[in-house]
Image 1 (cartoon, helix red, strand yellow):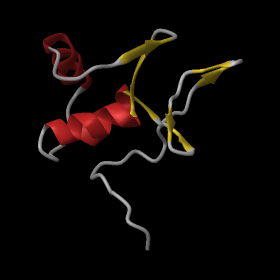
Image 2: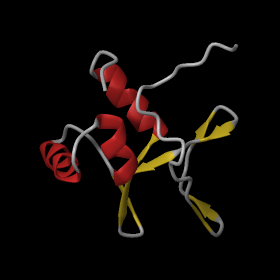
Image 3: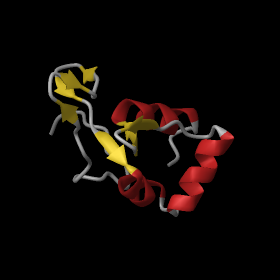
Amino acid sequence: MKNETVFHGYAPNASVISSGSCQVTEKLGKDTSILYDLVDLEKIFKVTKRTLFNWRAKGIISLIDFGGRLYMTHAMLVAHIEARGGMV
């Protein structure tokens, strides 16, 4: 088994968004980054959607608005977890 980082609450059905020639995801090595929507983030953090909105208003988390929906990239999620000492 490779050295893989496993996050508790990983959402395997997370969205990867692309629109025509404009791809919204960023590159992480060879892989395309995953975008987590609010439903995924509710499961990962084990909180309600209202809590996610409160965290966003307080600047605890950052979300990307794309097409009227809010997302967090995998890189943003990892950075958030690392900033909190590895705790989700």
